[in-house]
Amino acid sequence: MNIAICTDSSAGISQIEAHELGIRVIGMPYLLDGVTYYEAGMGETGSLNMQAQLTREEFFAQVEKSQTISTSMPTPGDIMDVWDDLLSKNDVVLYVSMSSGLSGTYQAAHMLSLEDDYAGHVFVIDSRGVSVTERQMVLDVHTLAHNGFTPEEICRWAKQSAGTGSIYISLQTLSLLKKGGRITPAAAALGSMLRIRPVLSLMDGGRLDSCATARNMAQSKVRMLHFIQEDLNEKFHDGSAAACQFAIAYSDDREAAYAFADQIRVAFPNRNPVEIILQELPTNLCCHIGPGGLGVGVWRIMDITRVRHELECREAS
Figure 1 (tube, rainbow, N blue to C red):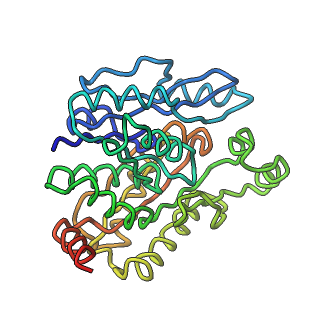
Figure 2 (cartoon, rainbow, N blue to C red; figure 1 turned 120 degrees about the vertical axis):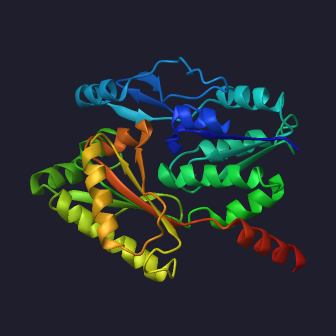
Figure 3 (cartoon, helix red, strand yellow; figure 1 turned 120 degrees about the horizontal axis):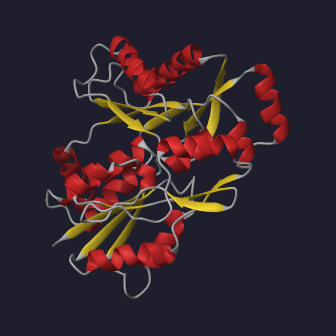
C-alpha cells in the first residue's frame, strides 16, 4: 500500500526537508491589512507554491506597519487539489493538521475526508500541536508509514500520542495579539506599561494559554525551563530527559535560539544525546507572536517496537 503524507506549513517543515521526505506541505494563509499572503507550500517536485508570499525579512517589516493582522486556513479547494494529486499516485493520504485548538483546519479537512471521493482513502490526524510538536507528529507518522503500519494503526497511535509533548513560548510584545484581537486593548496597554513578557503554553487540549509572565528574556528562559523540568518529572516521568527530545523555535533571532540551546545542554547534562532541534516559528504563528518570540518544546522519543507492542495489546483486548 502506498501512503502519502500531507501537512500544513504550521509544522514549520522546511522546503528542502519536505522534498527529501516526499511530504506535501499546504501553505497557510495570513492577512496583513486585508491582503492575503501564503506561507510557502511545497510541491512534490520541489517547486514553491507561487501564491503571494513574503520573505521572513519582508514579513516582519510589513508586520511593523500593518494595522490589522489575522490568520486563516486553506480553502477546501486548496486541500482537495493536493489530495487529488496525491491519490492519483498513492492509495492513501494521511493529512496531519495543526492543532484543532488553534485553527479550524482539522475540522474542515475531517469533514472533506468523509465525502465519497475521499472516504477510506484520506485520514485526517489532529496533531494537537504547532511548530516543533506538529512537525514531530508529521515525522513520526512518516516513520510509521514507512515501517509497515496501516493507516488505521497510525491513526490509533496518533490519537493517543497527540498533545503529549510540551511547548512553551515567550513573547516580546503583546501588540500583535492586540492587533489580531486575541486580547483586549486594555490588557495589551497594561502589559506594555509594565513591560511584561508573557509566557504561553500549548495546553493538553491543543490551545495556547498564558502560564506565566516575566520581566525580560533571561527571566522568561528560567520560567520555561522550570515548566519543562516539571513536565519531565510529572508528565514524562523522566526527570533527566534521557528518553526525550528538545526543540527550540524562534521568530527572528537565531543567535538567541543558539544561546538557549546551550542553556538547555547545561541544565540537562544527562538528556538524550540527540541534537536539539532549532526551527523558525511558522509565519502564521508569528502573526500573533511577533519578533523576539522564543519557544522550547520537549517530547518522548517514539519507540517503534513499543508502538507495535501497544497496538497489538489493544487489538488483543
